Length: 326
Image 1: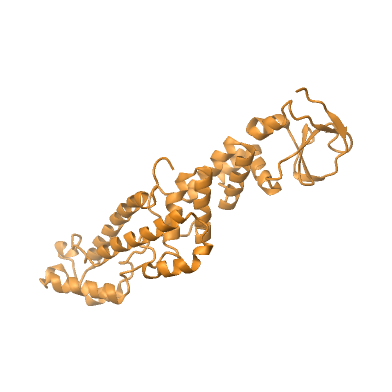
Image 2: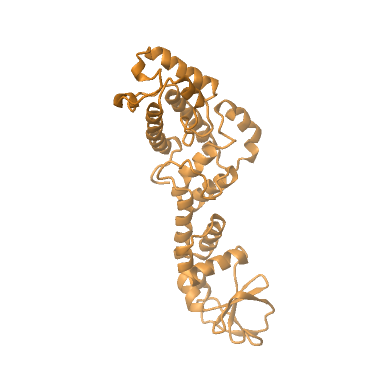
């Protein structure tokens, strides 16, 4: 079908950020006009490549600053803010390369790129979200990166991962939800779950996986935490251990193991909210005061925990049913 152009008057508010004097196309989002280069936006976005095609005749602005520009309204699915984030990624690609977008901006880019069929920006947004919700290794104990991984944010990441095919965000998002106030206490999770079920907007199957994972992780944690340090790193081997009841003292292992378990129970450590981040040896004043284990022994327990963190993390792929096809 041959395109026929018609002259028309267009009322709009000029966008101050994306208005190129040599632009040849005027895009309207609501009552805001953006004057852009047709070839550039069409080259990046399948939506515009089709929109500017011969099957979609456009009017031509005949007066004002945009005189001579073809004018096209953009789908109402797209917000002005999201579109401008996408244009920034297209027009200034090095900016996001040196200063990665925030999670909020990455999600805006994801929405806009999906609507406009912009592969370059879609890949950028997915990669950024995968960096924020990196599931390749266990989460670090340091939460100072400033990213929002609250329950609401984790639920949103799960939904985005499912909807837009971003499997790389799922594992970390599941764990952050698992170790949150919603699922964090095994003894309370089922009761609490029943009270908030209407607020959890993820799939029912995913909720059941989270509850099952909480029970599995709880069992593994208890098995680990009640075991006393192995003594493999005890400094008594170098003759430098000053803990009078440590490995060198010849005291019954069963007695010392019993004391360890007593402390674990008294301190409420049979159940912790976040086993992958809780270093139980970091500040154990009671153990040190009892002089039952030296710093070397506690360090061996901490090292065992680091190894178990990796092992538990690897098991979570099966717990959350994260197959390669997801």
